[in-house]
Length: 432
Image (cartoon, rainbow, N blue to C red; front, side, top):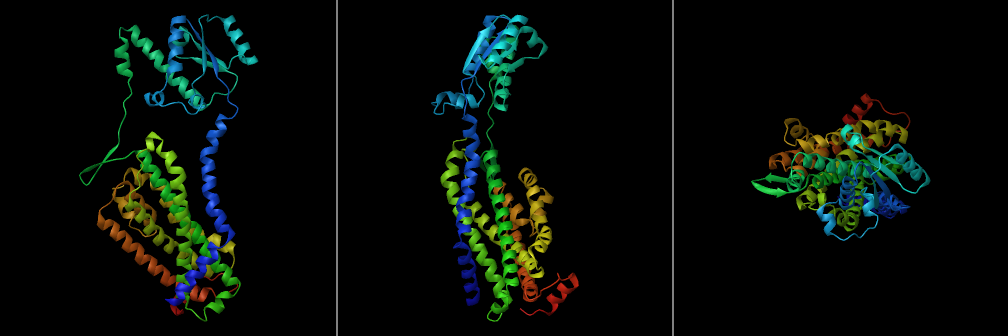
C-alpha cells in the first residue's frame, strides 16, 4: 500500500506541476467562453439602423402592418428595459419602416434603385395580389439572415391572418384571443411528487456532464497509455519493478492520473459555475436548471469507475505495443463502447425505461454514461443503480487484475507486437 501511495503521488505531482496542465486547465474554459460570447458580439459589429419600405395596396393596411412590426415582442421583453442597443436588431426587427401605397411597376423600379444606392435597406411587396397568391417578396441588397427572415415571416403571417379573420366578421378581441400563444410548462412525476423542470435545462445538464465524463475518460485513458509507452521505451520500469510489483505500479498510475483528472474537472466545474451558470439562468428556458447533489455524487462515482475501467484497458494497450501509432490503432476497439453510449444518449433521454435501455445500462462498458444519463433524466430503481455499480466495480477490478498480469510481462517485452496466443500465455504464466 505504501508503494501504491508513493506512485500515486509521483504520477499526480509530475502532471500537475507541468505548464501544459496549468495552460489546459485555464485555456479550455476560456476557449469555451469565447465560443459562446464571440459570435453574439461579432453579430453586432458594424450594424446600422435598418430602414425598409412596406409597399401595400392601401395606406391603412400598411400602417397596421407597420405598427405590428415595430411593436412586436413578448410581454417580458417589453417590461424589461432595453440594456443592449443591438438586441432589437438581433431578433430581426427593423428600426425604421415607411409605408408606400403606390404598388406600381414604376414605383418598384424606383425602390430597387434606392436599395441599390443604399438609401434604404429593402422593401416588402405586400400588395393584395401578393397576399392572395401567398407570395410576399422581400427585396434587399444584403442576404437576409435567419433571425430577420423568421421574424418577418412570423409577424407578416400574423397580421395577414388577423386581416382575413376580421374580414370574416370577427372582432379584434376575438382575433387576439384566437391567436394568443399557449405556454406549456414541463412537470415531471417522481415518487408521487410533482417535479418542475424544463426539458431544455435537463437536456443541457445531461449533455454537458455526459460529454465531460466521456472526454475526461478518453483523454486521461490515452494519457495512461502514453505514460506506459514512455516508461517502457525509456526502460524506467525495469528499475521500478525491482522495488514494486506490477500491480502496485499499475494501480498507482491509474489512481494518480485519476486524481489529476478529478482536479481538472473540479476546476472546470468551479469556473463554469462562476461564469456560465449566471448567464444560463437568464435564459427563460433554462432558468430552472438545478443540478441535484445526488447527480454530482453519481457523476463522481461513475467518472472514477469508468476511468479506472477504460484506463486499465489503455494501460494494457500501452504494455503490448511498442509505439504510439500501434497504440492508436488498437485503442479504436476500446473507444467503440463509449461512442455507442454517446449515440444512444438521445434514446435514453426520451425512453429511459425501455427494456433495451435498462439492460444496456447495466453492461459495465456502457454504464458509466448510460446509467448516469438515466439517473439525471429519471432516477431508476435503487436495485438497478446498485447492480450497475456492482457489475462495473467487479469488471473494473477484474480488468485491473488481468491488466496487471499482462502489464507485468508486456512492459518488459520489446520488438514486435505480441500475438493473441502470446498474450494468453502472459496471463497464464505471469506472477504479479
